[in-house]
Length: 149
Image 1: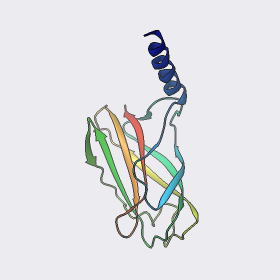
Image 2 (image 1 turned 45 degrees about the horizontal axis):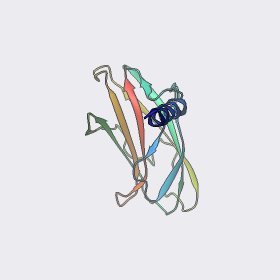
Image 3 (image 1 turned 90 degrees about the horizontal axis):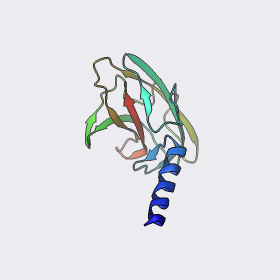
Image 4 (image 1 turned 30 degrees about the vertical axis):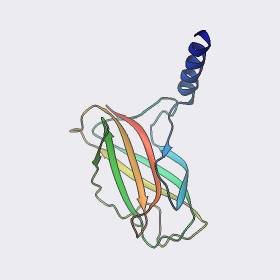
């Protein structure tokens, strides 16, 4: 019994020490190598998103296939329910640091801003950020644990 308690405590401490983790949620033709969110303390388990602000972030990724077009799709998952997040500009080839077509075996940096509206409830949310190719296939899919305050 004591061994089990020590094992559980050890796993808990490893999770605590690791801090914020960005999870791949189904990338198909690319792989993200870095996610950076302005003002996010990565030693915490969630990125704090303050209401009535705009958050800037970037995703570095490598691409394994050509993509002639790239669309951004964002969902917020609260209490197990995914809700679409409408973007003013879902075309990732415009004003995001990407110039389409994207070439195979190249690395790219996607940048975006995310408005955190004052009307959003103060909740923990799992942000699912996808970049999809011209066929609707996920180039990358990253989950970002966040808390709206």
